[in-house]
Length: 215
Image (tube, rainbow, N blue to C red; front, side, top):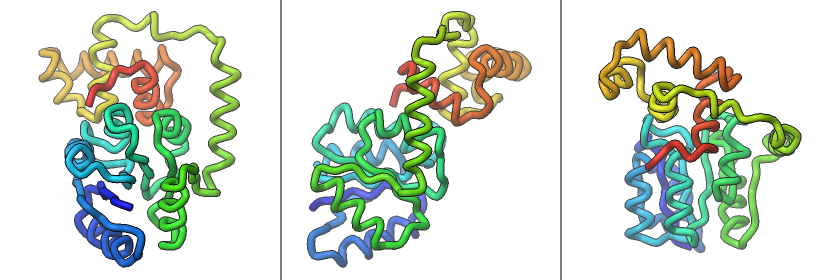
């Protein structure tokens, strides 16, 4: 099977490439350092599997790239790889089309099992995350009928939300929208309050759900 490996650390790409190329049924045909490069490599190499680091540089993250790649290259199966548990992302990652999820500190054998599982048409979830997935599914299901506070966001808040979700800092957002840093900070606080969000990962998930993030 042909594999593309996307991770922002060169040493990680090198290490995993050695492990995968040592397997008789696997070949790393391309590597990438961010989401944009991953998209380019998938388009060029047409791999069976893309192994994607979840947390790459802001604006080019694996989280954003996953949805775009799956939409334009549905035949490529995506395995998410991360150092963190990232419970907030798990439900949406799978809904976006990823076929598996493995922690970076998992044994080599688990990574290989995950790759072979999704190549065979299955879905692989790290056992530690299975409970979180069920819990998130139940939460989404029970809250699906509640009123969406999205409608009460102001025009300015709707401009700021996707930029913050992409990882831009207050100064960068202010420069892009030609407003003051204090205005950005005030609007961010109101966005979090109106949407009842507690962290940036929750804000990113919300922005993805509303299709507010382009590639």
